[in-house]
Length: 146
Ligand code: ZN
Image 1: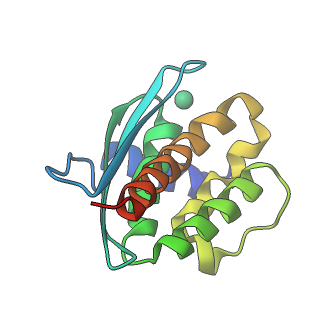
Image 2 (image 1 turned 120 degrees about the horizontal axis):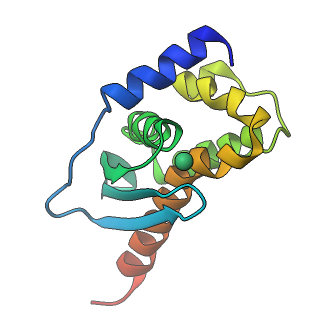
C-alpha cells in the first residue's frame, strides 16, 4: 500500500470521525464480519431525503474502523440516492472493477490498496453494507402507513 494511503487510513483509525451513538436516529443497523471480528453499528438521521447526520460505533481492525469513519464523513449532506450511488462506486472499486474518481470518493480512495488483500475487502465494505441496511430499513418504515 502506498504510504500516503496508509497514513490516511491510520489517521481515521486513530481519530475516527463521528464515532458515537445517535440517541434517536431515523434508522440504524448492526453489521459484523466474523472472518475478522469486526463489528459496526451505524446510526443515520435522514431529514427530507438527505443524510443530515451519520455516526458509527464499533470495534475491529484498522481497515474496518477507518472505512466506517470515512463513510460517515462521505455520507453527511448527501441525499439518500447519492449515498446509494457512492456505495455502488465504492463496492465497484473494492471489486477491482473500476478506477475510482477521487472527486467522488475523497478519502475513501485510500482504501483502494486493500483490493490487493482479498481477505480484507470485507473489512472495508462492512460499513457500507451496514449503512445500506440501515437506509433500507428507514425507507421501509417511512413508507409504511402510520
Ligand atoms: Zn477487519
